[in-house]
Image (cartoon, rainbow, N blue to C red; front, side):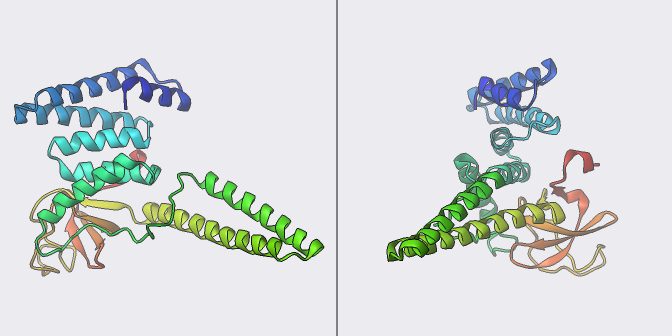
Length: 270
């Protein structure tokens, strides 16, 4: 997304300050410089890291959009910071699950996690959504779809009651079936948002982190295989400097908080 396009989006949400505009320009410039330095990997990674931090500052200032988080994730990914890239992609994906770049780039990042986990322990979650089921961006769209289908279905059923033609009955029943599907989609989208708030996403930030059966180094390991860097989990509980996590495979255990990234809103971060 170009800087101008982002500023248009920012203006739609509220007039950005001169400092915000400067941060965006610096982030875009650092990313461009990183691309230009692709023949010098270390220097390029430093520029991508700077770009990612600047994009992240804008996110913390309230500019939460899928496009911005996609840019941040790409910068972290090119800076070789896989965990922060996954965290940014997941944040953006929650805002817009239809964003094609986020889906593709998150899949690429998860592929790297799988390469570092030969046993599959700590593997990325699998999307259980049926492939034929469309993704709707906003709850308002779901509600509008439900309201339109519901009204049209009742009109069709009323017309059938008046003229007793089977075509109207079939149309009304089809509409009611679609209403049921829309309600299920609304429930599913709401459940995903609720789960993200109650059990925030956790991404393992270091290699070699051991999932333990308790909140201390004295507890035995849940698995002999350490978690790969970039492994995703859900936070169940926090006790002191330890986090109780549930992995995508259902395994539950504890890891030190210092070795994990938690998807918390800016107001709740330390």
